Length: 376
Image (cartoon, rainbow, N blue to C red; front, side, top):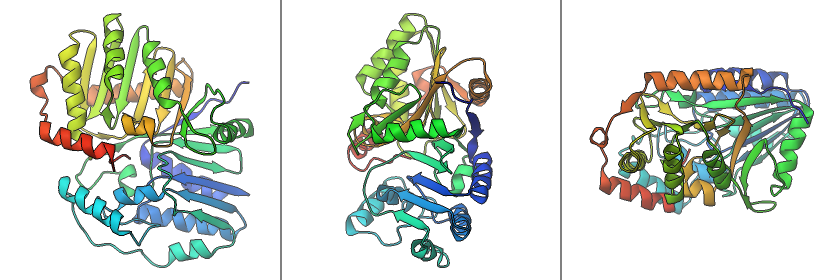
């Protein structure tokens, strides 16, 4: 079965322009699956567009994971769009994260009554009270247009965060009823083999395949391997496979954010360990942007989506990635060109001495990752 080439949407500004147009032109249905939906200008604006669509008869289903409230309320404007009341346990976790990461603590309120209007609308169904630990992000329009990737609903995704770091991430637009049917079939029966979609799912049947699919992509690299990762804390077998790739002559490039909003010292510790074990064919770069992307590509296959490389992403979170041929056609070419621009502006780490690893912080982040684990 052949499908139309996907369209790469680079960064939030471009994606949200397209998303707004898709909401305005939707005719029958909209399905939303989201991890972070912050109570900010963007979050409110999209809610108004969805309400307008519902008023003209479009059926809308919104699944917003309750687990995301912890991150919504511990950084940026510290306000969740859907969850304005928190449990004692949620408040305790938010308090700890704010103090650990010295985050700002502004007060914020739900604007207007837009949330209540969404909840009362007969054409809108909202599921926002379950802890699914679903980190995947996707939108489906009229059963024929699918957007998937790593971009949450929040101002910083289309601009810069409160620290001034420009966010960089991707979404993919896939067109056609066949491709949407294939996607939904995979979500209903995650155990089925799919070359196109990689998923971690807990329901309706448990299937955690992203770890093995990432490992396979690394193991099958023959010439090149590029990794862009927001939160990079791999287990030993991943480090071993990267080292093995370098030893067999694969040119490996790793791009990490220079200042990740969470798990920064775990990122730096991983880079430190890799540089200590590999003396050739590995180049590590630190980006001045907050690279929120989760991308792997060898000379044959590329993958991008929501899945970070760490234990929590592989073992407890629902995740979603696209796997696609890394060929000469427009989609792969656009991604490679953009990735190359990121490497060009990033700083090459020449030795371990150029990495500033706070070992106590890294250990603390490791412990946090086993529990709450900031993950966006």
